[in-house]
Image (cartoon, rainbow, N blue to C red):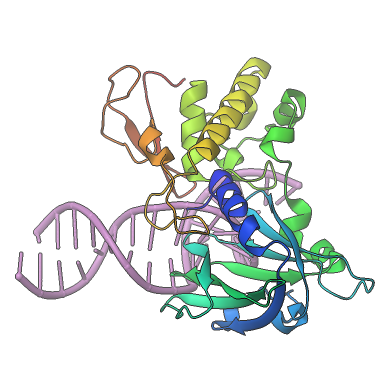
Length: 279
DNA sequence: ACGCGTGCCTGTTGGC
DNA sequence: TGCCAACAGGCACGCG
């Protein structure tokens, strides 16, 4: 389940493989993979990749600038649950879950492939120009990056009746947090996931934001969490799953106090917390 | 406007 | 052992 640290890891591992390359071929193997607002994949032909960045859980392949505002400026990829971006040799065969392929040529004429594989087909690719991004509600409403957020602004954004965990998962509140890092950051901050968001004091909100940023940075350092499907653009897995304090550990002993970790469903999501450490 | 429930999708898991 | 329901979960959507 790629969240902010996993997408950041994919972006970093992908950049050296695609930067400066020209898109010389495209294949769409599953129509629904292309976002409804997307320009056709063929509009990428001949365009050079400037670099790779990230916004929340979105991976962004940036293109070299051109004069016409109608032409795409970037390719936005949402991996959702099982999406993968993988660099492959020119003669690599597509797999049964390959949904899209970009053929990339370097200055020497050498070709490399970029595969978008996605078992459960929830992932999306959006070939976008600025006007298209403005039309895209999800993009417009996307909250700030956790690392750019001040304590005051965070507290303001938590002024809701909903559970604090549901609030953290809301991409309009802040961008990039999914089920893993919501549970982990709430544990680190000692806050129960079912507390109404608006019930957090200024001090608790500050503690939670600090814990969240710390957990996200630590996970990036460990190249993300690989539960089942996640790997980076070179096929490497992350190791942060070995550091989980609560996620996926319901019924097991708390690593801090030894109490039995509790499971609950919150907004339809599996949630694990320590009834002793979190209040 | 907000908050909640449901559908999407397929591979894996666990209970009977 | 084999079958099948439950589960994984981010987001769009519809409802109250």
